[in-house]
Every structure is written in C-alpha cells, then in structure tokens.
Length: 338
Image (cartoon, rainbow, N blue to C red; front, side):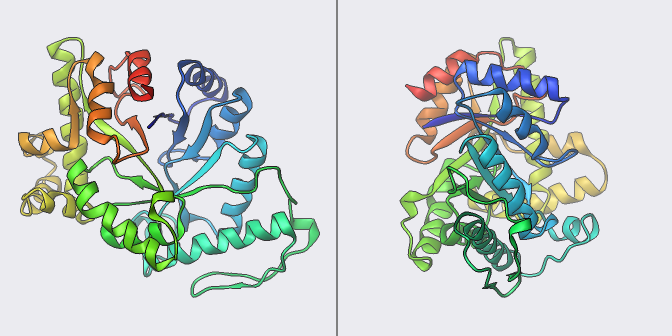
C-alpha cells in the first residue's frame, strides 16, 4: 500500500517548499484538485522541485477541456517529471459542466470512455507518429502535422485514473482506465460489495485484468491530541459528509448502509441553509463506516487494517490545507509502508 497526500493550490514558492517536504517525509505521490484553481499548474512546480515524488490530479475535470488540450498538458507534465505523472479525470456533474464550463454533458460514462480512448490515440501519434484517425461517438482526432506534435518522450505510458461513485462509472473505469479514484464518501464494505464488482465487470468488457487497476482514495479521518481537536475534526467530517450526502450522486453509499431516506432529508436542510443540522443528521454508525477514528498515533495502523487488500493508495482527506490538525506524518507514513 502507498501513502499519498493532497496539495492545494498556492504560490509557486510555497508549492516548491511543500513538495520537497512531502518527498522528505516519504510520501509516494502528491495530488492536486480542481476547485478554485487549475489542477495542473502546481504540479509543474512540484515536479521541478523533486526527484522521486509522483504527481497527479485528483481530479481534473475532463469535460472542461478537449481531449487534445488534455493530452497536451499531460504529455508536458510526464516529460518534465521524467515519468512521474498520473492523470486523474472526473466528469463533474451536469449543472457545472453545462452552466459553469459551457460544455456538453450527455451520457457522461460513455462520453468519458470515448474521451480517454481519444486521449490515448493522441498520445500514440505524439510518440509513434501514428496517423490520426480516431473516430469515436463523441470525439474525433483526425488532423496533425509536425508543427503541433511535441514528439516522443522517454516514458510515454501515462496512467489514467477515473473518478466515480456509482456502478456505471466504475464499469467505465474498469473498461478503459489504469486506476480508479475512489470518492472519500465511501466505506470499505461499499468498495468490496459495489465498486470492485463493477470495476471487474467493466474490465471484462474491455478484455482487461481488473487486478491491473490501482485504487486510490482520500480517507476521512477524525483524530486529535485533545478532545477539543477531535470534536473540531468530527464537525468538519460531518459537514463534508452531509454536503456530499445531500446530492443524488452519493445516495448509493447511504442506501448501501440502510439510510436511503437520508439524502432527501439532507437536501431539504441544504435548501433551508441549515448546515449545522445537516452535520448533526449524519448517524454515528455511518460515521464509523466512512471515517477512520482514533488517536493520531493509531491512524496509520487503522487505515492499513481497514484498507489493506481493498485500496492500493490512501491519503488523509481533511489534514491538508489548514482544514485539519494532523501532525504525526512520520507515524502515518511508517505505518502504511510497514
């Protein structure tokens, strides 16, 4: 099992400092995310500042960019990091794709499957000079000349991860991706009983071995050196879980644990602006399933006990960017690498 970490956007000097520290501590990969800032720019600074640390996006919004623009920036980062880049993609939701990015969103699982195949066809042209002739149901790549091709690189295989929660997107990942970004709103049981079988089904369709897929997830953690710190972290996790639970995309996780009515309740509270009530509505039993709860020195051991054989890579979800109070990084890294 590998231990990764999250890195929010910051000024270049801060990114450089953080990346070097992550490498010194022994983390395997640093992931950025696309929210208030671009997910790719920080990785260029992190790559330049490190030698071993892998870099990746968790996630970059696929449908916000054309396959060619995505292929191009991924190729640049793979070249400049000497083969350490992981391209993590997500579809986002219809409202944001259509109303924020002004892009199409129909049939997202089928569309992102075609998207990934098109990106790989573009990389094949970059590396091997293959004639551009990709013609998919949503995307096409049929024009290239030497002026626009960056040419071959030393490490042309760029692993693509796809993010998802529901079985349909899991099947898409199994069919075409190298890895799967598990959403932090999950439980080990949901991964074993729902996610992994769907990945395996997709892999069979694609004529692939599901065991070749790498699963990574940020994990909710509730910990602290004092009860006040623990209580604060619990409220943060409750708030985040209730936010996710209020949207239809994550209803399957709640239904799996017997809380099929909870999404409607959370959505109603969200519409009324009752954020504290939303957090309080998360049942204690559900919290035990979706979060690692324990003393700081126990977090790594408990993560390994829960996810060994279930996930290949883990990270703490709430501990970076000032949102948490976790400081026991050496213990965490040692426990996961044990």
